[in-house]
Length: 376
Image (cartoon, rainbow, N blue to C red; front, side, top):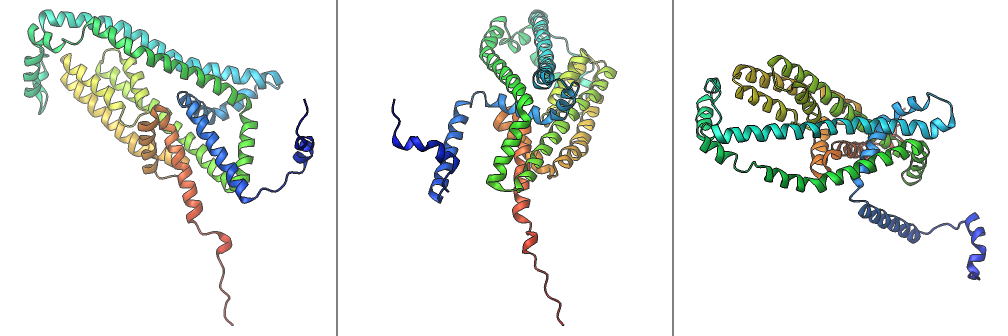
């Protein structure tokens, strides 16, 4: 098949490219922008999985380098290390989810049995409920009205039936399937980023330097610091917060203290998430007739949360990313509302880019400073 005349010199054109004019540069940038938008549209459903992989590979890259250096074998460094670390991360994430799902199924059976008993006999009022300070009489009156008699308990639990639970599982099923697909996408992307991350990062950085100059290195450094600081400040500090509050669960005698501790550690990564768990545990203690233990657990939990949110997290996140903690908090809350859980880490990274660009544009360049001549 003959080629057009212009294609005969294609190789020579590649060897000596002509200089682009301003129109061609703008057209290239516009075409690249359109392609990026098209790619984002196509990947919109699985984009959170890719973002999770990027965050994990940035946060765990130092650990991956240590694992890769276990052996000098090229096969280990190119395939074994990425595969092993990816599988470990997958197990660490999937195992608690599977355990929690099994426990939820078991507890749902016990819950239905307790609800059926409440419909038949009512729920006796805890002996110490009316002794609660400030709200004891109100809580006692509400309990007698809504739970104490079989008729009131039947109305209160009217919507909690096996059929309603089955309908709930049918609604949750597609969402669980979508989350499973995102999890698989995250693991696959994470494997390839571990394997080819170094060469890919060098190419991206070189391209960014050609487009924006040497200032992009400082911006990339701010983004990496923001991701590391956010992971340490949210995940690790949240895990430690759950362990400390978990001690309170054991001391006060909360049922299933390990499950409550795990739930607290997970939700502690979300701002104001931990109080949801230890307040439920406090109410459970009150319902079991241990009002003072429930109040003490609530006070202890709020003290730990106050110290964590006002002392520990600002020092860890803001110090690592070198950005004001208010911007970190706005990035966390905004990212959480826009992107879900992955926004907890994407938001602070975007705030770090904003602060880096702001400082770069607001600070006076050194070359612009002219020392006035000394008279005489």
